[in-house]
Length: 318
Image 1 (cartoon, rainbow, N blue to C red):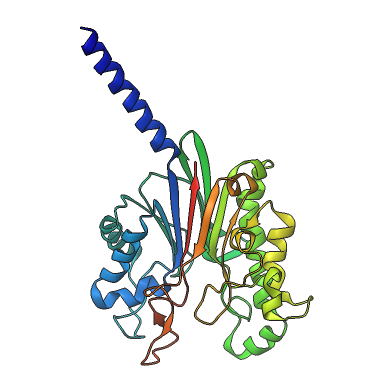
Image 2 (image 1 turned 180 degrees about the vertical axis):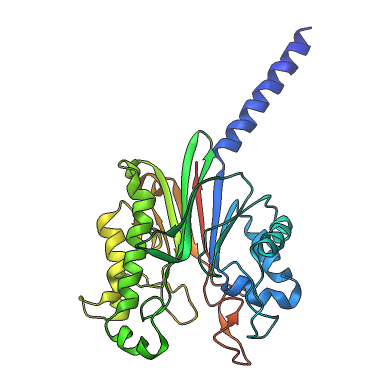
């Protein structure tokens, strides 16, 4: 009888230990702008892409430019619908072990999409209001894990030097007035007010904001050598000066400039609050045999293989 009770007790301790290990395990988050719905992956039914993602073993993936826009290996337009986009991503996510798929708000055809091992709670889909447009949309999701709440904000800002919806004939004048930079700052202020700045104690909460910001940061100006007054810094000046966010890659590698694109610029960022920063033990921009951007050899449009951007991988504990 004593032996039976010992086995029951041992089993119970084992279950508790396993549960504790599960609650304390690393969470792996992967962010990547995959260019036109992973245009490169159309040639092999996304085999290299999904195999690479599976090898990273992420728990959450945030994909910028998730919607297919072109016929395979061409610049001929072929835009999939939202339903087709979701159906394709459900199948792709299954191949690297993810069950849940979420599509951001997107006024145009450049949405962000999240896949996850865990169910997420959609808090807010952000596309703007009567006064402000968020051209590629943004989203705010919550992950409940280990008794903690992780707020995940995704975004993709306006990519051009000229202003939003400026007619072709006026674009050069608009670019000279830095209207693209000014528009991006308006987008960023709106996104932050709708998310992290809506929580007065966000610095003590777990927040991560990531995406293709299409803008550069003053902290990298040793590389860019731009005037201090450059409007290209407006977006990140606002984030670093008016929000609790920390630029994660710069914080981990303060003496290095780490490009996130094939054209040697850092425009993809992952921002975290101080509370989350304490839980992060590594983050890296990945350039390996697969992810390092290479220009399309046929010079098709401005396409790169596998993307014109590099992924960012982060490990932290909840």
